[in-house]
Length: 356
Image: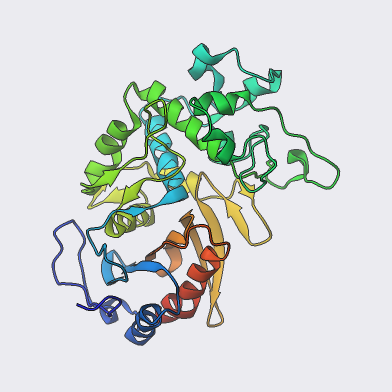
């Protein structure tokens, strides 16, 4: 099979995916064939796989690198969404009291942190889920004290987070109380890493084991690889390796309100809460519990979505009204326009294939 060729999925799947043809679920084949050809000929640099499921069936699958269907792909920051899902499961099991649970009591052994401030006592699980804590932490600002690149230079990443100062709000920025959501968004990997520490201390087991028991095994996901921090814990802020088909399962799980093959994996209430806007990122984008929310336009139509996203252009997108889940993986690491490239493929090809 040549790389980048249009592939009609097999009739049976060995990993829980019912498969079908594109046309049987009202997807036009022509735009998908054209997309495959453009990727193969270099029109979408370093995009590595595209999968589309509609109405619960895998209807399109193509790979454009040597890894193929069995390859583990670096999800980068899409890992953060997995962390949010695990937090929801832990809350449902009573291991974490709720999203309003304070962070600091989980780390009594780290109470001699830098920049002490009583406002740190009020930082909650929800603050990190929505990337809107008062800590000065901004990965999109190279000058930020909490930029993730500074975290990677030291051993204790949770300690790094707790040491951060409280952020300031100059006149030209929006204060939380001035925002419609009561929160000010600031992209902060360190906060999600700290949620990993919360998970380990709340569940009494490594994140990897909790994830396997409560999420991956129920989904039939058999191959994952976590990155490990210098202190030996799972890196919950990025770098999880997963197959494209398994990423598609996570999207389908949420489209189906937390059910997989009729079995409850994630509470429906958590799916609803996670995919509701809690903070505004910009004029086009909002943020849930580590899910991004945005409406895409294609062919004069609007498609509301929530999605996971990672550096390199990788996205797992859920379009509830269209009963559609899309996985696009890419390796455009270090490229500023990586997500714009992915979005162009999505709007110019994948969404144009949707009938009805």
